[in-house]
Image (cartoon, rainbow, N blue to C red):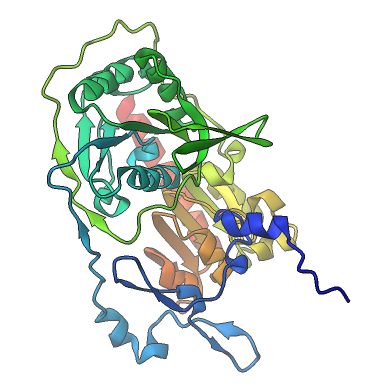
Length: 406
């Protein structure tokens, strides 16, 4: 047998792509390590024990570490504070803020901004209108500028470009970073580049050695060029900030923003069939598992709620849902604002897939299952009865709204 060590390019690509379902399996097992700022980090996926049947179990109640009281008495780790009292320059980031919150793409962008800022620069986040985000500090924002006004609401790229030009005139940032996404960042970045007369670096997935590396040739080739002043970055362009917390000091514009004569009429949002929304982009997911006995009732409930349907691996393997509806590490990683789990016990792969969801609601008969422990709101009972009551409540609410409107 040959002693030559063979490389596996696909395995190396999976190890670099943290959104790939097999990414975690390609990483070296490490239970704890020290971060760059001296904070001890623990790997939650490495904690557990082997049960009597040879299956690895994870005790989330805290009893494994000495009782539930220890978990409740645990003190949250305070991350070191990163301060830039007198920034030598600024790196401006314009996040998409889908749903009023930072997305994973936005957090990757902030991580790239801190690579460019170093120790002397400050990351300035520019947000349009009202938002619901309260974690700017842990996401890596040193300065926060909120541009409020009705002129920025809805689809108003021309007016937003005017706002960014005012920011550019006052702060003169060294670099502008926008997400190269379909949520608005890609279009706004290209419009802004045209207004500044800059040639942007697009689809950038890495900035290294004073060069931007972006995708080209339908994503089959890499194009390297010197670091541009305006960068439109792709997903996973950098690791998000996780080892430090930042000041997120509010700043304001000292000048008024010029009003543009809008040539675009915003007719509002278009109704979309929830079933046509990709799982990774859905904000409200109604997911069913092995505990669902009446799938017709499940579909009617999802339709009444206007939610995108999902499923556990067991439900997919049994043929009740399509494979593209599977949620979890072996299916689709989701970032929904609300995730409702009906009859799902909470396997570790499924919990990994919903780790980025804001609010989790669990409907289950077993009050001790892992999904109940993960959920922000739990309903213990028979799923059929609860779904029927939920449909009745939604219909009553809508009928009352129609009467008030009449």
